[in-house]
Image (tube, rainbow, N blue to C red; front, side):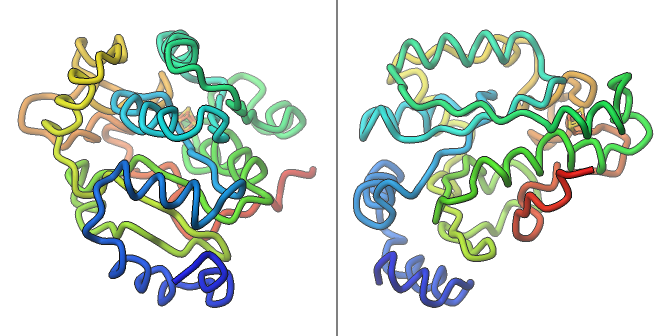
Length: 245
Ligand code: SF4
């Protein structure tokens, strides 16, 4: 199975076939294969520079520091996250970090006071996260996500490879536990996100993230009490259509 096959089939059947072939690989080997052999020059890591992002950022930097890393700055992030991004990029020597930002006209039209998160969080995520990411990923054949199976019930059955429209999503850490993540960060001497010590195992936008209590899912603090569990970037195929007003 090759990148050509994936493009040819462009669906979950092809993704499942590469899953079977490479299921035994360790995360770092899988990443190397995806970056250097399956999608050379056509794959990006999408990183939130959140609580566990250092693992994939470190692995990618070890393979090729010029790998595109897409970071969506929603305009509502914690200042600690922006500082952590700068610290990690400098530490790891990443040279191709692409900052995707929301469309200014959309923001001016729909969220001028930055309170859309309160009245319509789905639309807020759409214009602040989903559309900017979709635009940033145009032209790539694949992207790497940091989702883990243990993060929530809805992520417990994630595959290593997923079809996303005509692109492929690679999820190298699906089988990792929270302990695996912590061990890797410690072993590699990577700095933790400063909010982890304050009870945030999963970190999104400031208005929509609260600390997590013992026994809760790692993502229980995201949109707490709002009946929302995902921002939308992993729901269906991404499309940047709708940015124009
Ligand atoms: S997480 Fe909250 S503030 Fe951030 S884009 Fe979504 S709704 Fe808006």
